[in-house]
Length: 294
Image (cartoon, rainbow, N blue to C red):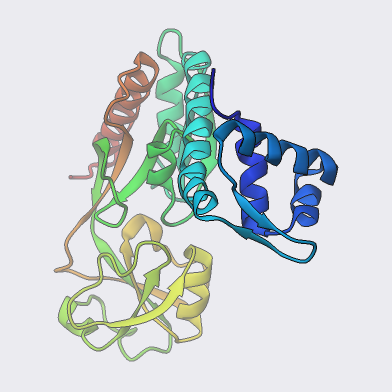
């Protein structure tokens, strides 16, 4: 028989984090006597004292500290196992694609159309993620596939196929000293301020640039560019200016970036493979029709 139940561990962790039975009971939406009884039952089952209690003070014992360190990992593992079970139950019924808003280089409609022509194609749910969390959603099973920009996104633990390779451009305020140029080089950006993406740091910034404000998403970055607080160096498909105060200029010697469709390395489901093939096919058709080169 198991030495503790998941619910008992959840109760223990709530008290361990609050160090107050009343607040923990309120957080768990149960009566305080029931919580105290559950903790005493857990202590009896383990044969250790988890808390030092007095009328005014609750503190973890060494045994409680040890259980607190390992208990959170155990609960997270249980939650991950539950997610995996749900994914397995629904693995051939729908597919979840995560992308940043506007982060498809206008390929998504063609990808969905190509996928819809596949025999037995299932529903595709579109999820929107932030600047840096899309790959992590695939790694943790919260999404099945993602549209990522390399080298900016961290693709560790993921397989991917390239959909589009594109130049990078600089986004500047219209009154910037470089805004009248037709094109720029990386040397032109030496000493200029460039933003840092929250969670990803300064990925893709050229040597000699100055670390600037931390940004969460594209609209926040564009606003800071308009205010003259930073410039931005972005894949072309992410940098079309949407405001008359912004200018977009090619950076002719910047390393090119790639838009990829990514999935977990161990995921060999036919549903995922069919979607990836449709995405590659749609991107190739778009390039041929538009005369674009990779």
